[in-house]
Image (cartoon, rainbow, N blue to C red):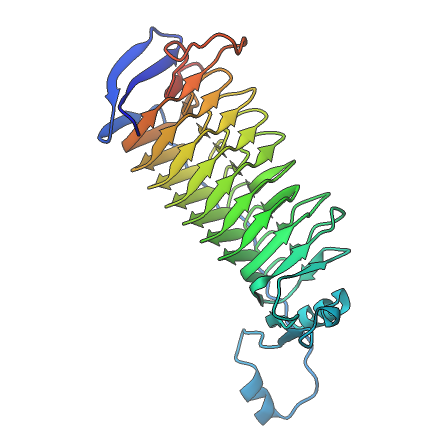
Length: 358
């Protein structure tokens, strides 16, 4: 940061209030009402059919409640890593690995792979799973868990790369999701965790959709960059769910409406800690970096160069909800009116705007 920015707040329906300088010790608490969250969604466990085995053998192979099947894809050469081999390895769940040679390898799928039992997939840093610009890659069924590690998923189309059903769970670690129409769709009651991963260059839906009451999304030590969203929240669109972001970066994300990087909708809970937001854009809406219509706590974070088309260059707080901002820095964020040629950062909340209209 090259220096402190005057913190300006625009309160719709009242005169502008000047809150002083926003620096490393900026604290602003904005309260109008509290919102309670409910949690819905059921979780069912699907069990695979096992071959007839003796009781003694079964005890050694399967612990209660766990799936330990799975297998490898390929026999050490690229030509052996086919979609049919991939399907066979996924069929029983469990641990799935790849042996496709020593060089990076891309496997294109022709249909989304249904995950019906708990499955862990490790790409070893060499494997890309591609939707071939024609399909999504995974659909996680109710009650199932998909763990992805060291894998790249790209070119998923006509849907999201990963669709997580009600009650499903997805964990993405040390992986890259790039160039997809959408990265992850988390249905109500679903759980998604993204750690040490890169989510970038989403082209249509935005990167992650966290939909509805009971949905939970946790993001840690990850980066979201250059994602495009045709609606709200180009990096993360969280509509009524629980969203926690720590130690992550958001840059160059562009939402067609509100929430250039993050949109937290009505009834949602948002926590942001030690994260960086730069050059995110709300193209035709509010909140260049974050739009909040629920309960939010933002702390130890930085906001620079974010822009909105109307209110809240960095942050926008909706009427009737609560946002607390602590120990965060703001520099060079701008809000424009309907005419992008007119810079009105001092009038429409260069760093934050709060709506007090019902």
